[in-house]
Amino acid sequence: MKVAYNPRNIAFGICLLLLAIAGCSKPDTKPAKVRLGNFLANSTSVTVQIYNENGVNDSIEVKYGEVTSYKTLQPGRYAFKVMAQGKIILNKTYGLGDDGRYTIDVAGLLPQEANKINKHITLARLQNITEGAAAHPANGYYPVLSLFNDYFIKEDGKGKVRVVNLLPGAVALEAIFTKEDEAVNEFSGLKYPKAAETKPFEPGSYTIKLKYKGNALAGVFNNVVVEEGKLTTFYIMPDMHNDTPIIAKTTAEP
Image (cartoon, rainbow, N blue to C red; front, side):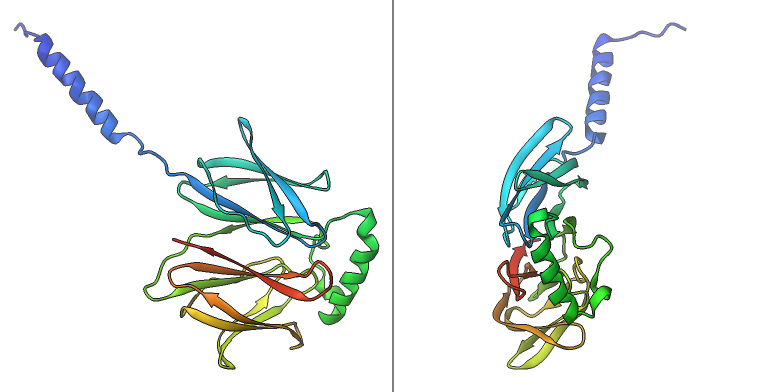
């Protein structure tokens, strides 16, 4: 039996095949967003260079206690090279996911010969408050990079809060959120340099009472605001000029 082939039918079939392949292809990826924070306690600023396989993507200066705005990057693996006073102090690679949102922080103390005496005095004071040698983390407070995922699920009428302990020497901080002198929420056992689990909060103004291990009062911070529909992060960090804890705040949206 002879089968007749119609060129028009063949062309039409090829078109259908191409359309089917296009329909099954991977959808366009959404960019990732990343911001940078500097909590390196004895450096007024750091420079963070962002690399991918094609070379330097960007170079950003970040002042102490500052968290930058989000930068948009295509999903993939990136190296983050941190420089302070002209020297490379950290170099770490992270994978940034499709439509991900991240904060990358540098914290700790700069391992510099000129600062050894000040570092020793500062740590000695902090360790006396937090029970001596037990306050030492494995890396001895040398600089460390940490990546925090800013993704969260929005709850109607609520905000989300997390607290990050970036105070060298304080191994078990407690942050108590109060309204009109009444405790309404708390984060206990805050370990350096970690973030506590995110908690839902009623929007509004709070007072934070910060306590060291052993219940010694570290500080009181009034009029800290939690915003509805946003993730609010409170960073506990040292004042560069003394041992007094201070708080920096950032927000993220879903």
